[in-house]
Image (cartoon, rainbow, N blue to C red; front, side, top):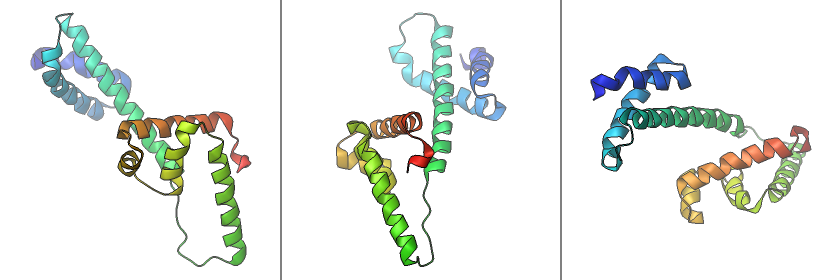
Length: 157
């Protein structure tokens, strides 16, 4: 089966990611997923079914890559030098403003945003503390960033 469909699966993944190496990796992952999902296959057109797996793999990969770029943009860096009283006051005011802004987010985003960006916790720590799945934490952070981009201006805080 792999020999028969490898070209088709590669074309599907390449059409989404536009990177030959990544498309090859995704094609391999598609066949691994296919083997795991074979028991649930319901004889509805194998090539279409396999294409859907390949397309979903490629789309998930692109989304993950986009999230990684967003996460890099939101990372914070700590100062390694002593701050003056004025800098400490400005930093405190910024934290107060950001905390206030977090309070304006929809309620289901506030906890994960606070934990991730202010407290610096990982997805798994947040999931464990808030009794959520890691994917739920990831999705809420993604949607919160999207909400912030849509509803806030950069100079507001």
